[in-house]
Image 1 (cartoon, rainbow, N blue to C red):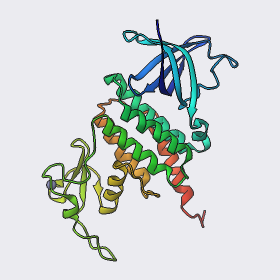
Image 2 (cartoon, rainbow, N blue to C red; image 1 turned 120 degrees about the horizontal axis):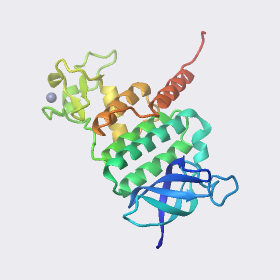
Image 3 (spheres, rainbow, N blue to C red; image 1 turned 180 degrees about the horizontal axis):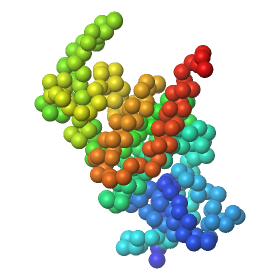
Image 4 (cartoon, helix red, strand yellow; image 1 turned 30 degrees about the horizontal axis):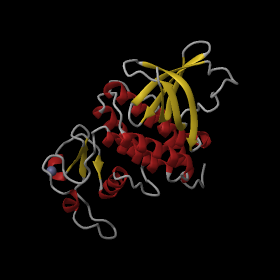
Length: 274
Ligand SMILES: [Zn+2]
């Protein structure tokens, strides 16, 4: 049996017995691997303190491709500080949601993706350090990027039915005071927006030019510094992810994200009355 050392990030840990845990790591080449770690539940055991959820580093395991559960040898953190995610609710809730997306998808696919690994670890690094105003955009941008890595890139530029450029359909930016625009609609199943002409009596949320510009920036990996309507953005992302990942149940961490977004927006609104 040979030892294999790979870059890895810890997504989740489950108790397995009195003294053991099953650890699920994301790796660039092997995708999600499950590793049995004996004796790491005791406080002072070797490597236990390094095994924080969302820790990034080098995983060494006894690896056999045909085996579902690999054997843990060692984990050495080498980047970031996952405890910083706990400084506020949203960085932690967002990281949990992204990890859940990765775990749910990995159960179906089971192959590696260096792009996905880079996206996910890059998002953790940003969530650890971003200012409170930037966290919602960083989280949502990472989530759209991960969905693209899974093969479900959203299309916010062209109508998903007739292909017309939505830039052209919206015309010039509205003059001050704002003239009424015909709004696009989100077609969750089709994976993008319908122009006003194709939107008809559709049921998806209406998306104005400002929201579409924000969606385009998020999907491009360039989140705006502040994101008005972050809770509504999350509602769209969450529905899109459930439909395209084919899930019959909701994400466990979605409620935590909603709670954090509401708390955050309440904090950012000046409160001059009770
Ligand atoms: Zn159209």
